[in-house]
Length: 127
Image (cartoon, rainbow, N blue to C red):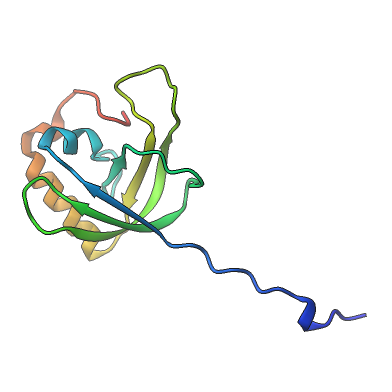
């Protein structure tokens, strides 16, 4: 017996995640930047329940140089749970910029802002 189409429920569309991050200082940007990821990205030091690795969304980021906020498509690539016993690693998620012109622009702007601190051996919020 073939099931009737009226009994099938179409899948619901995936929810669109939108993250907003106003980076206050160059030091905060250094700690948040995912310099180890080929496309770059940012660690968002905030609890975002319900996210999993691979989730995608739009990151609206304001950099500490006073430039206008930019929107970058991003994917969750890192998760830090609460209570790791380390005060230098806050709870949050790392989102990598998508391989797009806007993602490349965001990475380039961050790298220009960070300048020589990019090669620093000081710890970040992920490494």
